[in-house]
Length: 84
Image 1 (cartoon, one colour):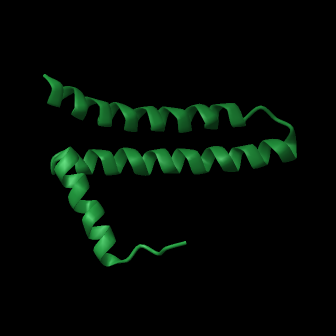
Image 2 (cartoon, rainbow, N blue to C red):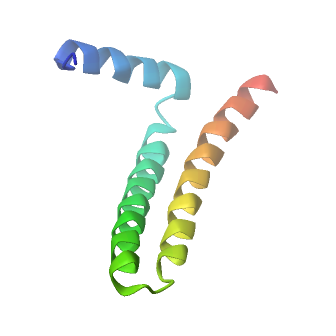
């Protein structure tokens, strides 16, 4: 599996800036971080649910899905403004 070096990461960053613009990057980063955090909590909740047999994982799954929807909304709003 190839490793990503500094030049590859810089190219990816430039593409993100060109596609989304500088103003959207902090919002996308925040939403992505929240989505990852929610996903991590949901996966930990599933492990605890397996051990305890409780139904607590459903709320964690809902939170993770909500984080992903926020990311999609941010990305979708950028593409919708470009079409208008």
